[in-house]
Length: 124
Image 1 (cartoon, rainbow, N blue to C red):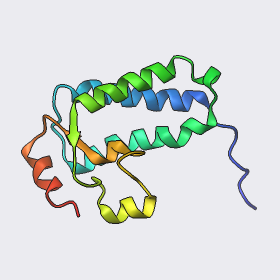
Image 2 (spheres, rainbow, N blue to C red):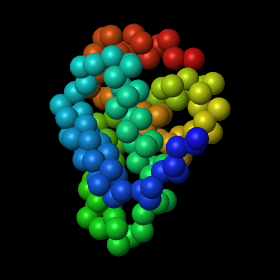
Image 3 (cartoon, one colour):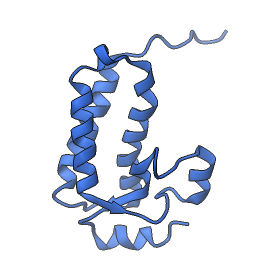
Image 4 (cartoon, rainbow, N blue to C red):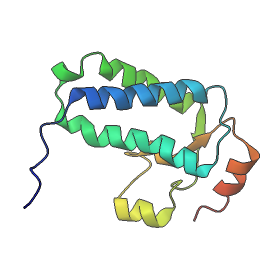
């Protein structure tokens, strides 16, 4: 017996993701003290938001749109361009991620740490 199909998307789930992204970007302004695995997990939140956005209309989004835009601006201000996808070229190609559409995967913290910087040199 197959499980039932998923129900309709819940705006509360998207709100939680946007809240998580906003908190991360605010904290990022003070610097980043974690490793590459943590960075990948943190920026994956923004990808989940991108994937969920088409499921909701402007009325449902309401103030979440402004909160997301502000968090994105904060992220941009606290990061720098990275020459390739932080997940690596192979995954970027497979997922069809680009610096224009999935820009969070092509940026790294302005204020970082030695461990993360060393790990970023190994990204292929």
